[in-house]
Image 1 (cartoon, rainbow, N blue to C red):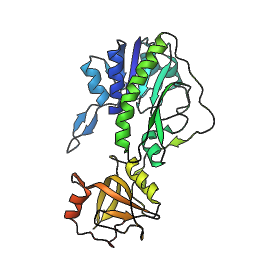
Image 2: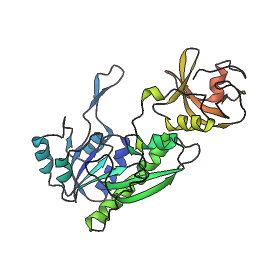
Image 3: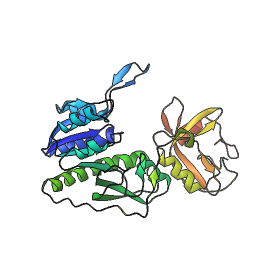
Image 4: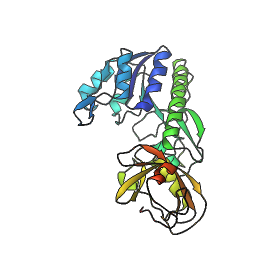
Length: 306
């Protein structure tokens, strides 16, 4: 089929590779324009999808807007059978959604209708969900409201981080979309409307919610830490400097929230405790808790600021 691919981050790359490998003709890749990066922010760096598309010789487009007649005409001129959208980062106007002959398919990293929206991977872990998944859905005007064609479920381990779940769903999602396109091509992809019950929204992660609140129960603190790892990272303050927590597990003991309980960096929470496994000082490298403790004279009874 003739495919327009729309995506930006690393999460979208395996799906693009899968589509090309399946023999479909990707006639254009829409992605974010190169963004300033580098030490001084002077270098313009293309997105992961941009780099991958160029490797395959696919024309890359990054229009400032998809709204308006000109953008709609340019999109329709691709004469695409289908558009595949994976973490593109923009809402598609009705004229764009209607242009491909077989519609627009979106790969969404949740079990819809749970966790519609921008941060489904992080929110699923932060909420303590035991499973999530990926869904290939037909896009419509609402936010992730379209009917679902294929779903793959994935268990969330008790200590799994958002980064680990991201990588797992990224690979499974590419295979899922490949199967969805194959079924669509032979007219065998059947869509099921999402149920009205169970709708939740995965709001974009705000920096203001990244600070650890030790007064919460240990399970909630642990889920908060792993749901924000590795980025943007949950953090606490020690000696006036931020310390990001990249990995934790449930700990033993109890005490005043924010108090160190032992020599393994176990911290008391509102109920229960969390043991910090891997941390990172601002501007430093990630390190095991024992290495961190060698440079900080923390002892049982000391407090860390949430």
